Length: 130
Image (cartoon, rainbow, N blue to C red; front, side):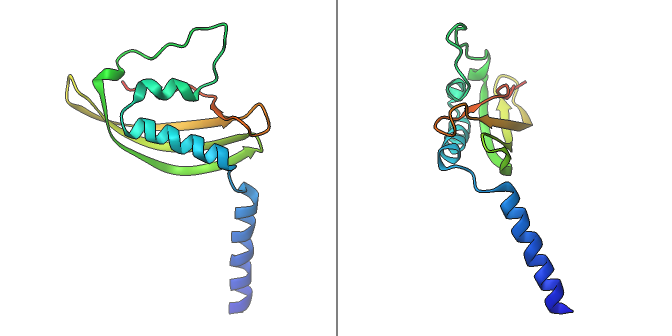
């Protein structure tokens, strides 16, 4: 009976891993770089991780100079939605410096590739530090 239970647990664990797959290396590097930009407070550089539309100018959200990030931690790692679409969630702790208000936000990230994994960009809006 113990062996059957152990075999079932191992099988379920293997199925879980196979279902989500391993994130492509380029995507992993891109999402880690995004986390580093946020963690180190270079928030104006977050726009580099979004898809650039040549017909629209890139604008940096206002008020980022008032934000000091105090923590960035993944709540869930990269999970495959489709081979060219992945998601992850990060928890960002930050302080609004002019009011010394400590805040926390959940950043649900959707990462997409239009060229079979060569380049990855963040599809959903950047986090809002209110």
